[in-house]
Image 1 (cartoon, rainbow, N blue to C red):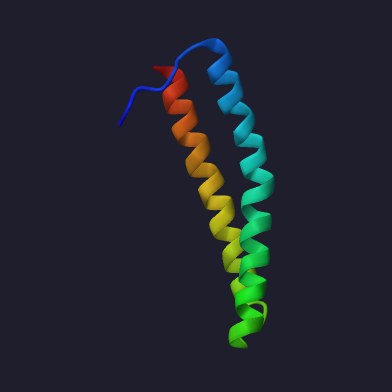
Image 2: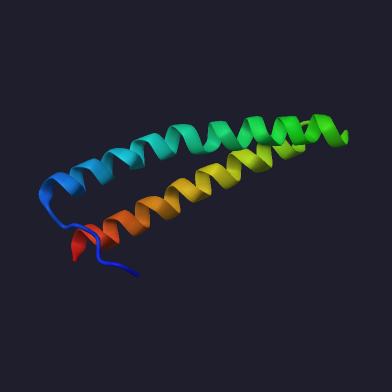
Length: 71
């Protein structure tokens, strides 16, 4: 994996994406799941699964970010 810039500004810029991931990840997952559930006739279940996957990806992003920040 290539080395990432470790300057203070790069770390702050990357940390701002963590907040966006916690908002946009579940929202995008919900709406994609809603569309998929409507297209396949599965009801509201895929929308909640998509939101849960979006939230899980936000937590993974946060863990990776804190791991890079602690180096």
